[in-house]
Length: 68
Length: 205
Image (tube, rainbow over all chains, first blue to last red; front, top):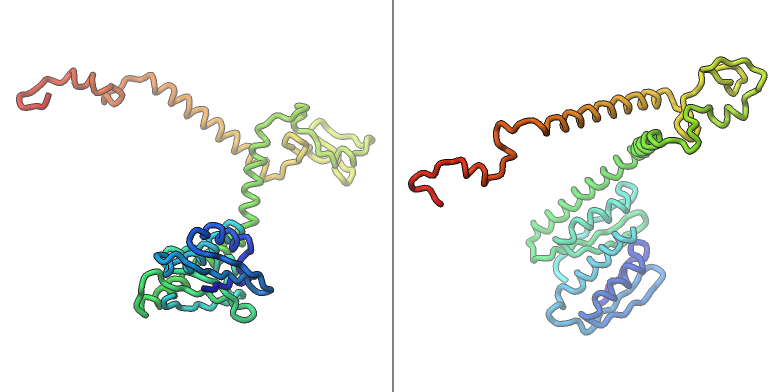
């Protein structure tokens, strides 16, 4: 599972903060490109497989509220 | 991921802050991601959390657009009223400052600028001072700290004094009223009230 977060719309701090919080639910890796932060999620806990990507995205968005 | 709907928003119409604000409101209903779609356009991707029919997904997008409009207007009004808000806060702080005594007790002194510019040779009355043009003028009322009051500020000071007097009067009335009798027995504890009532047959103990 790969999620791209546009670097103009999301902050690195928000993305990394979300990765830290969601670590127990999967294996995360972040790659920073010019345009986006690419988050790869592997070995997702099965019972959360359906909801994890969406909840992760929402968490990053909510974290932006604190940073904005 | 399930079905989602895209809402494309021009940043020339809605600021980014409004897009964020609208998105936050929908976090409980949908999974939301933002992306750029070309220059000057933000794409909001909404995926309902619960399985939804096409009509419901369309309604979600419509609700989002309404929320966006609400926040866009809110920000616009906030921006338009910014100067008024700052003025009101400044006036409130100035009013509070007027109540505090000046450190040197020199209330009503002339502004520093007038003192610097004042030529000593000009003859002025007790209620006059020398203006920046060198001519006598009525002495400017000031707040402690030497800041001269504007005409509307002088009125505000008088209004504040009147208000303070009224508050004192009301407080005195309240204090006076606390000594009066209690005709309806509101302040009497229930034990006293019950002790006075006769016990009837069938009443609970």
